[in-house]
Amino acid sequence: MANKKVKRKLNIKAFIVFALVIYLIVMLVYYFLSMPIKNIYITGNSYVSDNDIIIAAGIKNYPSIIKLNSSKMKKNIKKLDYVDDVKIRRNIFGKLTINIKEANILFFNRNNNKLVLSNSKEIEDDNSYGYASLINYVPKDIYKKLIVSLNKIDDNILKSISEIEYSISKSNDKVIDDTRFLLRMNDGNTVYINLINIKNLNKYQSIYATLNDTLGVIYLDSSSNENIYFKSYESLAKEQEEKEQQESDQTSE
Image 1 (cartoon, helix red, strand yellow):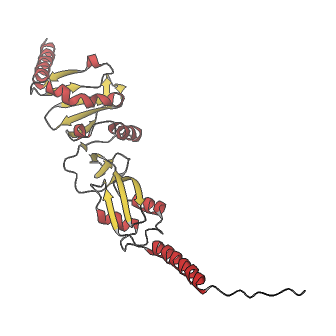
Image 2 (tube, one colour):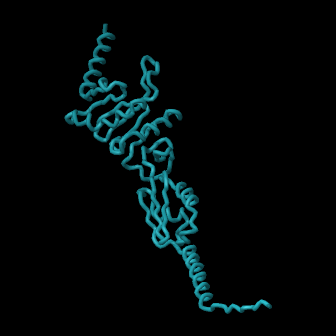
Image 3 (cartoon, helix red, strand yellow):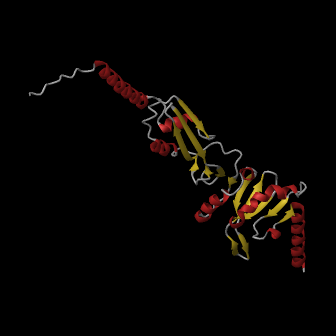
């Protein structure tokens, strides 16, 4: 008995549904791949403008959010002055968030007229007002340690410093401490500090509160808290007068 051939009719309805589903999937994929950035949110920046960040990131023309190269964007943004770190987040609805972590300004170096940042960058900036000024030369190795050490100091303390002067401690021409600095404060006091005890500087406000508005020299360069002491300008002037008087008496003899 011969096999009977059965002709199958094409199910037009099923084919149309299948084709429509494929079309919708392709269009949906195309939509997400080509969808431009709709909203840009930039946070954490104070010194760097939003516009500079957008230009550095290469997103001024709102390109496709899916095709963004986040690692390349981060690399370019981190080339900007003041930028220490960058975090980038995006979602499928076109929202792009760029979180900036800026370096702090530590001081203004008068030797090269540059602002020195917490990440060791040195940049040219006309706005040096309100920051401590380093007024003399510091050996390169000590200079690097100074930057690292000042990162340990509270920002409000840094802003209360007017001038930083490298001031080696000597006795009879013998160097006792080559990491000592003299700080002139905005309130009129003078502070001696060395790098090994730099954290003592964070106690400045509490020490100042005990001085009853008396101005003078605060010595914070001792490893022992008990040896941190204060001498008023008045008492120092009196000591100098007595010393000069003794020298004068010895000369007359």
